[in-house]
Amino acid sequence: MDSFSYFVLVPMVYFAFGVFFFGTIIKAIKIFTKPKNPIALQIYPEEQPSWFFVLKDTFFLPTVKRHKPVLWLFLMAFHIAFLLLIVGHIELIKKFVIFQIIPHEVFLGKGFIGVNVNPELKY
Image (tube, rainbow, N blue to C red):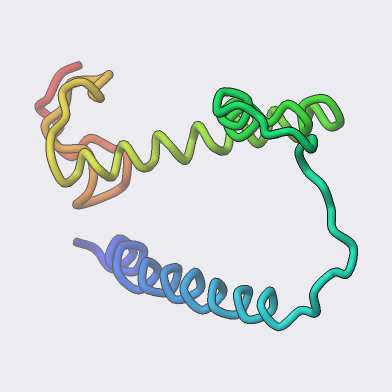
C-alpha cells in the first residue's frame, strides 16, 4: 500500500472518528446546558394521531415538503444515500446477494471504496 492510500485509510479515518465523537459530545453538552424554553411548542394536533400518520410524517416529512420543497429534495437524497452507505458497510461484514446490484467478490474495504480491487472480475 502506498503512502497516500495509507494516509487516507488509516490516520484520516481515525481523525474523522475523533471529530465525530468529540463533536457529538460538545453538541450534547450545549443542548443539555441550554435553559428550557418557557413556551411549549405544539407539533401535532391535540388528538392522538394514528400510527400510520406518525410513520408517514416521520419518513416523508410532508411539512418540510410543503414549506421548503428544495430542502425536502436534498433531505430525501441525503437519507437515501446514507441508507445505501449503511447497506454497503453491512455487506463488508457478511455477503448479502440481495443487495448486490453489480455482482462482485471484493469491493474496496481494502482500498478505495467502490473501486473493484479484482481487475480480472468482469461485469
